[in-house]
Image 1 (cartoon, rainbow, N blue to C red):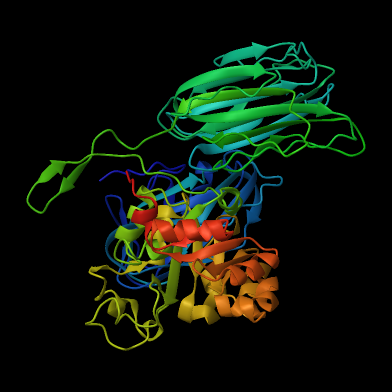
Image 2: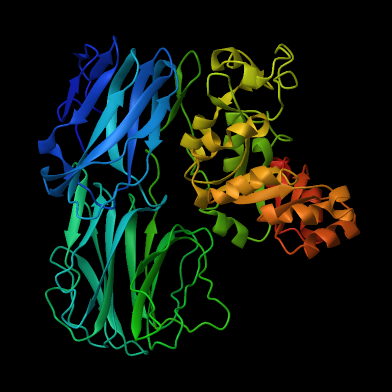
Length: 593
């Protein structure tokens, strides 16, 4: 078998193995004795880029395997000029009786003074078999793989280069904006460019694209200035769109471009102003992270170039200065392979493929959408609760976020379940609390007929496409171990509003919190006393008008809970909720993929 996962380093060929009597058979490496170590050869060190990488493993293990990951950084390309090893990150691979694939999303590498790196993995127990191992740059979002920014003023900064990771089939976009109306800057050869001079605001710039070819990961490098030393403030972005096709450039113009509703787009703006003017930081619902070159300074004139990728309509802050130029690249987002089939147990039959909707890209994007829908236990009134079937159906029906309640088993595996025991969802289960059961014991039972789900499965399937609203339930004392599995920008920590100690701990860890209460708590004033630990509050959709009035007067965004029908959802919104926790997803969002 050959390596099938695309990687910066070729599994087996670029790695050495040691310790534990490591044995190799094809692409399978086994450590049957005491664990060991595997690391990339120094000569195969790769560019460090922005330092954000994932480790993707296809492995098998009879028990949980401790794993530590470190990196060696080098001052020069190709593993020359060793700086030293980074701090080690400790993770645990769940037991996997059969080959399984998992992704480890690790802390970003420090990039200061470093040009290249190599990974080092230490296996802490016997029995691990690795069939494939890939180190891949972590994408910025579902649409954007990577990006880089550069700026120049007069002759300063003209030697700067833009560098970003790309794969064959990606579309690279270079956007350049100039304070002057007749910039001489042009992209390098090989780029298709649209240059605009003297737009109505007296600015200029270009938008250039190129399709990434080849058969391996590439670290693109480009000079956005074309060797020209203008006397202007110039800004540039290099943005790599993941597998985008049919890219169409809309060059710089002084109004927001008209964008087609059946495509996605990369939208950019430029603004050049004096110190007293504030920058215009526009938003776009559902977009990924902001990409920016330059920033406002209160002591001198400044220039900025902003870009967002998505399919929403740009929203300018009220009273803000309008950008002096807009440009866009309209494109068809990547889709999965052209064919699919399903094994029925007797034969392989063709299956229909549909593009799954993407949820809110961040907590901020979620809260920016009036009437957002959070799938409670995946939609417990529509499908078997807390099952992969429920979460997949909720995504297919267009839920903006997923609520995930968890417990930690006695051997440290976080599983998705609401109650302290499994008896309500599986009548054959014992009265033993989940926290006193091992994962091997838990997995024997079902949730309403569906397999019990591990948290890692939810994270792997939807951790990047949807905001998660997470609750540690009966394992609240292990909240630190729980929280380290999530990203604050895409996660809301949820618990009963009276648990202020727990909600405050989540806030200190950088997470936004949702504390849910009931009508009695609003009416007797307790909800107001708990509110300092809550970024958002929850109130029953059917609570009295007075209970809603007192909740809203606290001054925090309020989510209605838990809505089993479309009527309940609309009742919550009419009462003043910004969004709703919904169990009846198929009622509120009846049309699915």
